[in-house]
Image (cartoon, rainbow, N blue to C red; front, side):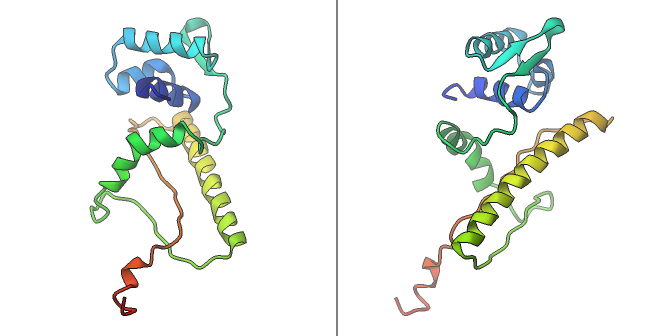
Length: 157
C-alpha cells in the first residue's frame, strides 16, 4: 500500500476489473500496467491466467479497515470528501444524527459494512448487465460521535 499506483491496480483487480480496462480508463501506459501486474504476482496477490486475464488471490469482501489501508485512505481518498461541495446539485449524500447505545453504535457499524458489500454487489451487477458507458465513483459511509464543542458558547463557556 506504500505504492499508490500498485494499490490502485490491486483494488481494481480485487473488484473484478481487468487490468486493460483500468489502463484505458486512467490512460495508463502498458509498461506501467505490466510492471504492476508482475509485482502483484510476486507478492502472491494475483494470479495471471491465459489470455491476459488476472484474478485476485484475495477475497474481495475482505474488510480493509486496518493500516496500511487506513493510512492510504487518509493520504489519498479523504481529501476528495473533505473538499467536496455538498451543496452542488451533483453531490449525493445522506446524513443522519441519532442517539445510540454502545450496542446501537455497533449495529450501525455493521450496517456500514453491509452497505459496502451491497455497493460491491451493485458494481458487479452493473458491470455484467449495463451497455452504457461507466465512470469511476468512490463512496464513503462513516460514523463518529457528534462533536458538540460548538455549543460551548451557548452553555456560557
